[in-house]
Length: 82
Image (cartoon, rainbow, N blue to C red):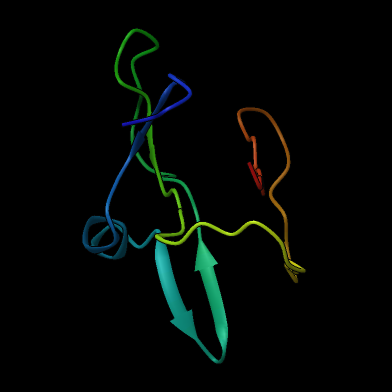
């Protein structure tokens, strides 16, 4: 499910919500990777969330306001416009 062929399993919204990887409260939207469990280095990878537009945009101003951006080993947060 990863178009870049990375070590990750992208899940849909229902599974992400059930795994507490997705929440919306007090006007804050939170996304995270699965922080539980052991992952086999030869397996499919950690479960995570991918957000992708259904529309195609050719121009515009795109703004993202982050309260927290993850850092550390194994993280690769990205905001891409391609």
